Image (cartoon, one colour):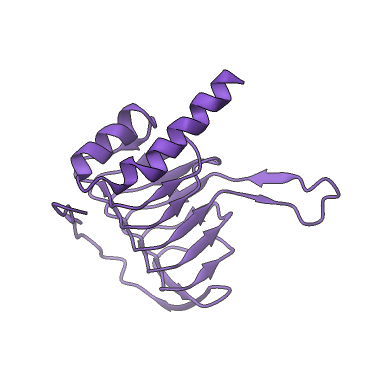
Length: 178
C-alpha cells in the first residue's frame, strides 16, 4: 500500500508541479532521476506534458515533445532521433479489450523511429511502430502501424502520400521558457 501511495504521489508531483516549471533543465533532471526516463542529447520535453507511469520512456537525440502532450508509458515508448511530437498529441500504449467480459487491458510497446513528425492533436492508439521518416498529420487518429516515409492523415489515419527518404536534418528546438 505504501509503495502505491509513493508511486501515485510521484506521478502527481510530475504531472502537476514539475511539468509546469518553466525550465527544461529542471524538468529533464526530474524526468531522468525520479521518473527514470532515458532522454538523449539535446532532446527536450516542453511544459504541460502528462505521463501515466514512471519508467517506460526512452528518447533518442535531438527530439522534442512539445507542450500539453499525454504520454502513456505503461506499455513502454521508444522514441528515436530527430523526432518532433507536436502540441497536445496523445500516445497510448494501453487500452481495454471491448470484447472481453472482464474489461481486460491490453498493452503494447510503441516504437517511434527516427525523423518522424507527429502533428498537433494527433492520437496514436496502441500501435507498435511508427516507421522512419513518416508523418502523422495534425488531428489524425492512428490505429495501425505507419510505414516508412508515409504521410498519414484522417480518422482513422490512412496513407495520403510519400515523403522523401533522404532526410538528414537535426532538430534543435530547446526554448528557454517552454
